Length: 80
Image (cartoon, rainbow, N blue to C red; front, side, top):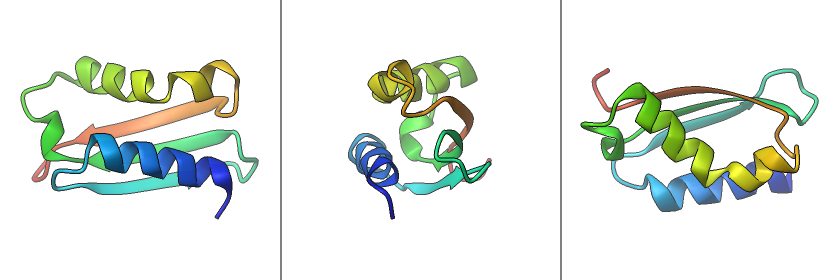
């Protein structure tokens, strides 16, 4: 597992630990284009936009320095 994947997984687990299910997929096998699926109770009562903002804030530095060039998100609570 590469260090970028480990870093993202560590941050997500720390922030969204409650009832967490996560997949972080390198969509193009190039280490730059990712699909992140997070299921967590921490998203309850948040709009889709607020969920996305929360994740983008968490990974902002990795997006800015283009460690992650493209990030597709699916953010949900259990049962969705």
